[in-house]
Image (tube, rainbow, N blue to C red; front, side, top):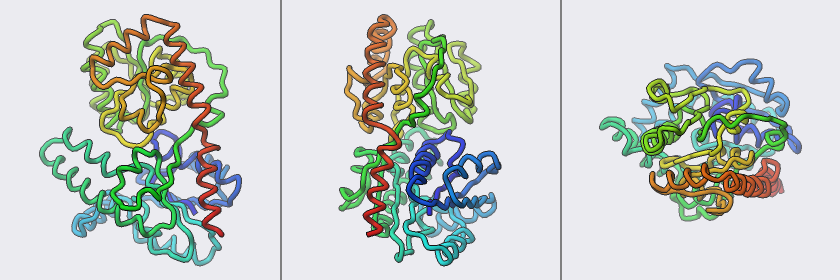
Length: 386
């Protein structure tokens, strides 16, 4: 049984991407029942994508009224608000019934958001995928909020940190996306958490695309996600203003109104929104730039750009999760001046771009694949069966 907080298709968010590919490769060894929450309509076309790998799929639509009520209850109970957001009493009853009538061997729960549904089940081995340190991600976003939101984010940070620590003991197995995130979980036995990185699917690399590089810089991501919004703002304020000749391509689903306004007021920025084949966006840029300053986890956008041979410049915060070698596989920058120096260095030398791009591609292809990383998860699950 796999329990997720969002239906894992389309692949426009990191948790969806991780769940989709893990399900895909787990399905080679196991029959999978997918139980997915969703706060939006899930189409039959989307469900059909998962039916390729799942024996049974159940989508539970979260209604706005119940979301508001459960968030309020979480507030009163001093729990993280996102625990309430993704909670439904009827879903918990459904899962209990499902476990009674079917002989499940393992429960895989993605994110602490879903842990309330299965934490009290002890007769079946369970794995909790923290994915990343959600509490620290919340903490890093506090300073960018207004007065009221700052209070809410501080509360969410404190309650999430406490919840991440307490939920640890309810699950036999715990996984997380990077060593950097494992160190941020506030539990004395956090060394027991198994690091399972993200990967690149072979099909992503198997292409014959010939795309003109018509932009100097490119950034890709879910453009409603605050760390991505902040990254584009950073590029606009600290990089594009220094060189009016630079052209930036921004691609990704659900562009926030702030990003739309930015693109409308700055002719250096091209905003595409959702792109059916995101590789076409990566390949339009000479450099992939990711000034990530407040996110956690592993940036799959970097893995994808590197795999495609696009030279990447990012922050140490983002590269710490990937562990690519600075000045060989990737370029790190810690300040606007650093970013501008690295950009000028790459744009002035095609040979340097090709070298960093090829090294980055080799690094990702040798170290990150969904088949290899999911094999780590399979091994842990198998040990739980014995």
